Length: 305
Image (cartoon, rainbow, N blue to C red; front, side):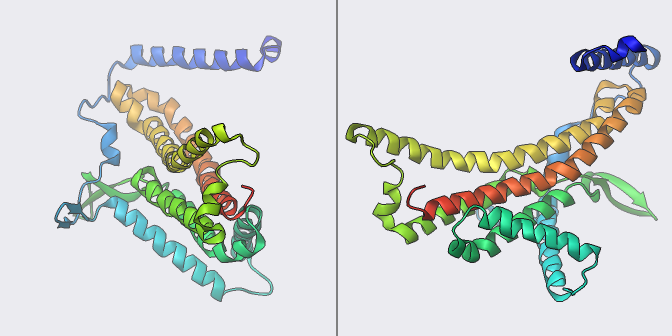
């Protein structure tokens, strides 16, 4: 196998992909389209069927699985913070040590590392709550819950929804609302700190020629509106893509292609994606969102931002 060791990483990856494609063709030739379900629609996994319909005029306030996940996230965030506050010990156990490390990350690295000290004390509760809320929302999204109302499972004679994965942050409305709260907050804080004229004057760098000022001001205004898109879509797209990859590798691709035996290959890949999402992506996206929030707030109150 010395020839394999001499191959570059790119050639090894290409060889692995070629072997996977070849094995797929062999499986298809041997088993045909066994397992195909033409009625399966992957997008239905993210469809929000109303469980309890509540409509006030044109406003739809129906209870669905997204509301359930948000409720669980809010309760868990509040309960964990209260529990930690009441269970603080001189000799912390492993759980307290881990949560203190996360708390220290939110306090020192995310908040104080990107804001003046006086504003960091003021805004830390908001930024920390935002960080933990998104973190718990992301992590809960990888816990199977009986939320698939389109498919029923019989347990002890009771018909209950099938277990499925869903994340509240994979619904664009949730990251968008959080983003809008952040967006209005840092503009209001900037105006309070520097006044209306002083705040908007910081949109133009010092020493800019007079003819360039309107252009640069317009570009800065556009960039602030673009933050709404970038901050919300980053969180939404990462969580949605992760869940779609797990969905397809764990059985969706097998069902769509009708290659039941292909599950032997795709299931291990799904497990790898699942571990990668839980260990890295869930926490990383919460960290990025909270860090950008601190940066925007810190920049808004500093005259030279």
